[in-house]
Figure 1 (cartoon, one colour):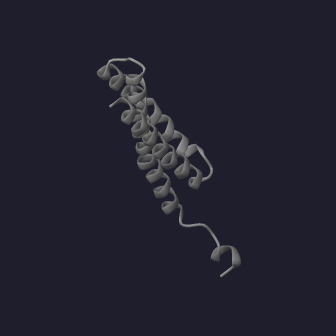
Figure 2 (tube, helix red, strand yellow):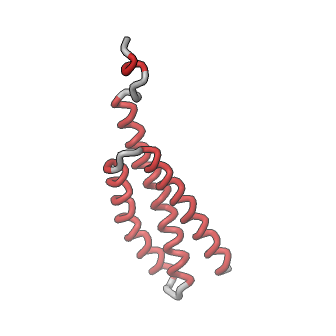
Length: 103
């Protein structure tokens, strides 16, 4: 067995499964945070709640599509996970803070 075979990356199917998982679950987490933060910020800015909810959900579809496609376009899967999961957590935190300031 050569040295390159011992230190090669995981099987292509495992890498693909990890990238699909990042695209679906990480994209969902990021989109959920985006929708929550967007609805809270728009409501706080004076928009009617249902209008803010609908607009942020409609924009969320585009955000999910962008995040999904970006996950397959990026070279580093770790970066994709960090950006999507970390960004989703950050946006959810912003939404929580804004919602707490409204009530």
